Length: 263
Image (cartoon, rainbow, N blue to C red; front, top):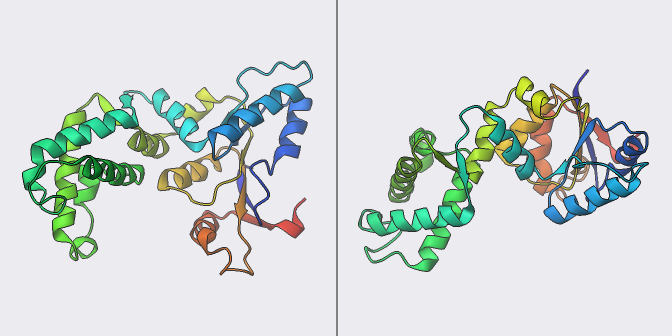
């Protein structure tokens, strides 16, 4: 039965599940996906899997970052929009600021949009989109959440409205595409793109976006998900940075396996 197993303990590198994965490759049981936090780790581990395979041939080893796999899955969704780059998002935000700077009293005194303002605004917009905010979702933020800084809230409401209009029905930024993929993905779409996958190994992550949590939760209903989390239940102060993740995984009914009890 599919499940989520969270292995806790100190950080031990990106390749915590390497023994299990390499054994699968050696026996030609390529029924897994590996998710690692950085592109360099992905490249190195793909090379290791190829070198480990009996005939030194393993086409497209299934090793990804969360961004990589979510972007691939987004592009399989019917009606998927064209995903723009971060550089293009920066230019679009700059264009919006130029046109609407006089309305954005919190962001500017009414002058031109300086490069530093464009950069910082793009970074904030990127984070809002990564956490699933389009203009509609941002409008739905409860009044108590925005009452302390109404002008700031209003400025970003204007920006997100303008961004949605600019994108229309054809474009989407990468952070919001990742969130959309996790939200829309169903089992048939996943199995169609990754047939016969039984095990998913995730390690090296401490911070998770809503899209990552949602993808993990969905995958654990379809496959066995094995996740290494830098955390110790009996030392909450030292591992406070992963406490929120631990609570979220616990709410998913994850099986928590402490390092000394691992099999």
